[in-house]
Length: 486
Ligand code: CA
Image (cartoon, rainbow, N blue to C red; front, side):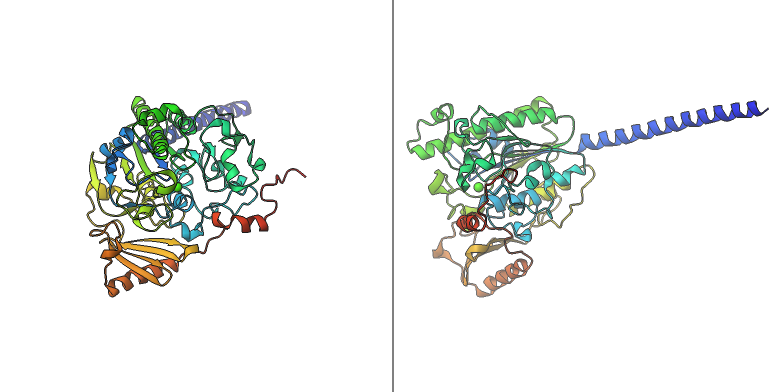
């Protein structure tokens, strides 16, 4: 009798384990299916960010001497923006705005960071969430290619900031030809601009690259699309072209024999190399059937420094580092064939900070950002679901120069230099010609008070920037010393 009872107990136990295994496996299957459904529907995201490109130097903004047929496709197959801004007029802070979706002064990134391998505070603060970190919550794979510029210290590098892959360089610029990359690593650098000559990194390992830098980044971009094709991915494709130094190989230069100015000719060749790369990226998406559900953004991080790289901001006043339109109004286009109309022109003011909010609201399960965003989701404005202006006010601040600007949705803009404030209406005077300065004290005061409200929420810079190179060296005599060596 006892044996019989034990026997029944034994079989019951076996049966229960079997039942549990079926239920568990089927739950796992359901979870897997749900994950697959989500990942199939969340769009891929590619940000093509170029460096110091002039506003008038793409075909979709009327450029005549540099054909950009592939970049133009992003506009013709999607939306071209005529009032698109970045949040700062030079590289580092503008990029910090893009990658966080927040005004960079909220977290003290008001300066171009220095190349400082031993300084964990010289770069993007850990209080901030990058787009790659946020997208992890929707099972994205992310890769950063090209210029990083969010910190050289090992704790600030791409793989520590949500990216699964990286190919590029950590500083604010780089030489373009492999024979220039003679420094083995960051500790062989002895001054700020020598960092242009360090070997490239794949993830955290130095590599021997053989190609012209722009071509190498394009090659990596299409390889990563292949690698990540079966899941949603985010690619931050940050070409350093056409930032100085002006360097281009013969195969691109010979396309521009008709341009006589040697600087403009080299600049044109550099832009053309980027355009070829964009073409390869778009072709790869097409080949893999990913075109429909991939959002592709194209923009420059700031206006062209016309004197330095022979870029052209067209009729806009000023250029890189100015808060006039030439410094902050950039070429900007995006396409997403699955959702957005083709060939649309959007004229209301938008800002690069909108990229983050737009992307987060379009994953299958919308992601809540860790911090409050300053950008907005642009999609309803582009589909016509919303008719108003995405932003009532946009703000800019150059902390060290006592320089600021604010514009409203109607195109009224003040630029302040200490106490001296000038008012323009951009709809009537996009050139910001001082002859047509608007005299309206009430309007000017109103904009100034909006700026003051905004400014009160901002932080002073939390690190010394490029303009403080000498001071930083004095305070940090071991700036480039390898801490692991005596
Ligand atoms: Ca730049």
